[in-house]
Structures are given as structure tokens and as C-alpha cells.
Length: 147
Image 1 (cartoon, rainbow, N blue to C red):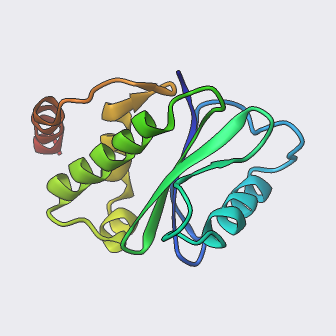
Image 2 (image 1 turned 90 degrees about the horizontal axis):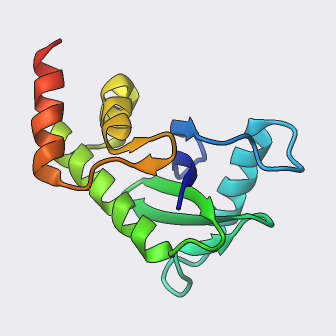
């Protein structure tokens, strides 16, 4: 069970957060091509009548969730359980929301280093490191006080 990448982009396809834990999927030459393909695939889906999971390549599926104007996407192995990753996306957004106080796209744009700090506390090397909100808030507030 490993995350291949975490991607956050807005409705226009502008990347706000991106972390690769594995090489770019085979058959793709550039990361921009992969991101554009993911954006086209997800933005064209009917979010009311289709699931939040879609097969992307021969070994990767996308698990995504849209919050306001942002899409949060995890690239995971085809055999992994989607609902677990959907709950991790939700937890990630909840922690960002609590850390920033009702997070919005501008918070991520102007404080991207803090958003990456939250991401790194939760996910490291493609593995989930922490799922306790209390432990995450404690660590993040300690790191935030160091600034």
C-alpha cells in the first residue's frame, strides 16, 4: 500500500501542491504531460453520478476528491483499497483546514511551505505516517512556533 503521488490543482488545472513518490508512470515523457492528462480525465467526469476513483494507467488508479475549487488527487496502486485513500484525502483537508483556519486556495498559494509541512507530517515516502488529528495538530503547532 503506497502512494505514488499527491496532486492538488484548481478547477483551471493550475497545480497548487505536488509530491512525487515514484517515477513518472511509464509511457509518459514529462510530468507536465501526466498532470495535464490527469486534469483532463478528472475535470471531465460527472461528479454527481460517477465515483471518485478512476483507472489511470496499467498500474495506477486515481483517488480524488473536490473541495470547493480544489481537487486533491492520490495516485495509488491498482490493487489498493480506494476508500482508505479517500479517507486520507479527507483527513489531509481537515488538517489543512484546522491549521490555516478555514483553508482556501490563496492560503495554499501564499503559504505553500506550510501546506507541504502538513503533507510531510502525514505522508512520507509514499506511506501514511500519521492518522491521529491530535498528534498532527500537536506536531504542526510545535513546528509553526519554531518560525
